[in-house]
Every structure is written in C-alpha cells, then in structure tokens.
Image 1: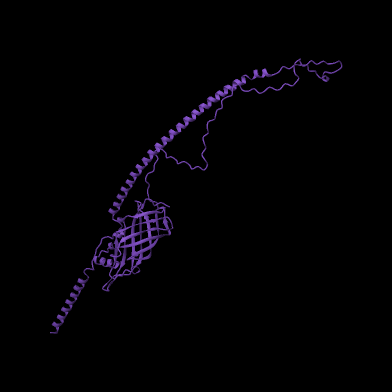
Image 2: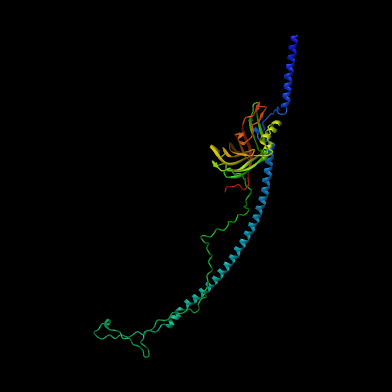
Length: 395
C-alpha cells in the first residue's frame, strides 16, 4: 500500500514540475526568442548594394555639375572673346590716330627743313651786302726812322664820317617755319594704380574640381544609407547588440590638425533601435521613453589626434572626438576614440566606440523577474560615412 502511495506522490511531483515549466514558459514566451544569424551586419559594414547605390547617385550629381560647369564656362568663353574683339578694335583705332598724327608731324618737319636750307643758301649774299669797304692807308717813313716807329695815318675820304662802323644786325629768317606740336606722349600708369584684371587665354576655362580636401576644414554630410549606430550590452543570460540605420547629421572638421574645433551633430531615431527580440525591443523603447524623447543626439565640439595618429599621406587619422550626448532628454559630456579614413570614392569613413552608463542619462536598467539583469554600462559604437559638401573651404 505504501509503495503505491509513493508512486502516486512521485507522479504528482513530476506532473507539478511539468506544469510549472509550462506555466513559466507561458509567462516568458513573449520575452524569449532564439535568433540564429549567419553574419553580423554591423561588423561587415554597409551592404554592397547600398555602396553601389551611393556611387551611382554621386556620379549623377557629378555629371550634372560638369554639365552646368561646362555651360557656364562656354558662356564665359563667349564673353571673353567679345571683350577681346572689342579691345582689339579699340587698339586698331588708337594706332590709326597715332599714325595720322605722326604723318602730319613728318610733313611739318620736311617743310621746316626746306626753309632752313634756303636760308643757309642765302647767307653769303646777305653778309656781302651789309659789310663796308675798308681803305688801306699809305705809310710814309722819314729818313732815319724805322717803319715800326711810324704811326700810320688813316686817310678818310671826303664826306665819310670817322665814327666806327656798327656790326651788322642779325639776319632774320626770310620765312619762319610753322610751329609743329609734337604728338602727345602716352601717359604712364600710376605707381599705385590697381592692376587691370588679366584676361584669360583662348579656350581657357575652369571645370568642376573635386570638393574633398583632407588638409582643409570642410563641411560633411552623412550618407544615411551607409551609416549605422548602436550599442553592445551584457546581461545575465547573454550579450546582445542594438543598432539602427536611421541616422542623419552633418559636421565640420579639419582632419590634418592635431587639435581642431569640430562642430556638428549626429542624430538617430531612438524608436528604430532593434536588438532582434521583439519583446526586448518593446521593453527598451519603454525605458528610453521614445514617445517623449524620439531622438538620441551627439553634438561634436572638439577633436584631438592621438600621438602619431595622423597619416596625411594615406589620408588617415586616429584620435578622440568629444562633445555632448543627449539621451532621454538628459545631456552629459561624452568622448569617443575614433578612426577616420577615406575610401576609394572619397567618402570619409568614421568608426569608433566608447563606454556609456545608462543611469547617467536617467535610463532605467532593464531587469526581468529579478533573474535576468542587464548591466548598467553599455558600449556605444558608430560606423558613419560622409561626403564633402561644396562651400566648405578654409575661412
């Protein structure tokens, strides 16, 4: 009898264990989900089709810029040719005026030369007409006196005055040559005058250049399809990752400066974070209070390169970016080590990770029945790709 009672009690105990297990499973069935993934999307980066799509968009944008640039350049070329033709016409007119003035001056010089030549030819006759006749006196030398001691007597003909003859007056030119004004000299440019704008050469025009410069501060815009942010968390049972691709933002950076002031903001939609378990995602959104605080923001303030972290030749830099992280409406200082490099399509790739405590931002740490607890500290990570924006040159 006692053996049958023990068997019955054993059967009841087993049934109780089975019923408890079934009841526990019913309670946790919406919160436990096993996911088998062949690969980690966050580790492999953007999908190749997304990269190709961005390349095609960039090629289309570059082609449109080339078309607009070539159109503008041909308009400038036409204007330059018209200006060159006008300037050349003005130069020809000025040269013609100068040649005419030179011809008039040459004719006047020829006339003056002929008048001077005639005047020189008539000078001997004019001099002979005004020169008076000179009478040579006879000298009588007495006996015993040398000729040197005798003063000659000048015999003046009757009716001729003894006053000295005045020198002849200068002969006036028979014909005064006409005064010829020399051509006006070309005014020399002033020393302080602003230089004239140089004219471009024939068929010389600019074309759209690459906007990206690693060694200058520029503005960058995120490529949403190629960006993702998330966190890695640890719990009692297992580790898990939350991520989202709903990222937008822009920033201004100078990569070749060891310490530079960066500016900008990276924003993600908190409600789009997923961990792969539906119940856990709902619980996470409740803790983040996504209904009242839809966005998680990180404002960039400064970048400091690591020692020997700058490789300008390969366009790479490692360092720490610092700013302010805002989660659930609460903002706290935040710093993250990052690595920056440039891919083959001139996209700037920024990756990094840093620890963050949820309690610092007022986020309750998830716990399930006091048995499954999540750690307060998570690792926040970013994987961003951005393109340079026109107009971000050094100021």
